[in-house]
Length: 140
Image 1: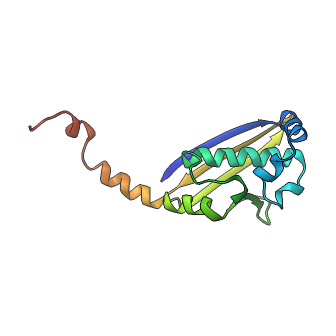
Image 2: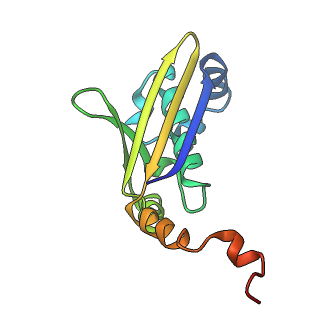
């Protein structure tokens, strides 16, 4: 069951100017491996991390440098999560995270879908009793 969706878009030239003005952002936002990439790739990874945080429903316990976007051998992007960020994902019952990224015409975009098997069974339990039957006061 889908439990979260996140999307983000980044203006690459603006992102590059921000990195030039504030070089420490590289250390605060990206893993050591990611820091070696070109600005347009960093912008796409920034969008991916923002989209992931949105799909998770917020940034509580999530740390930027604990999220790394790594390509599979096919080139497909994938999240590698460590530390408290991995713990947050596990605690929320998320069993799969899907990521799509692109950059073109000065823009970088990312789309994330988070899935959970746990939420599916919880949703079935919650939907067993119609909401209006509980709140309408019928039968009292």
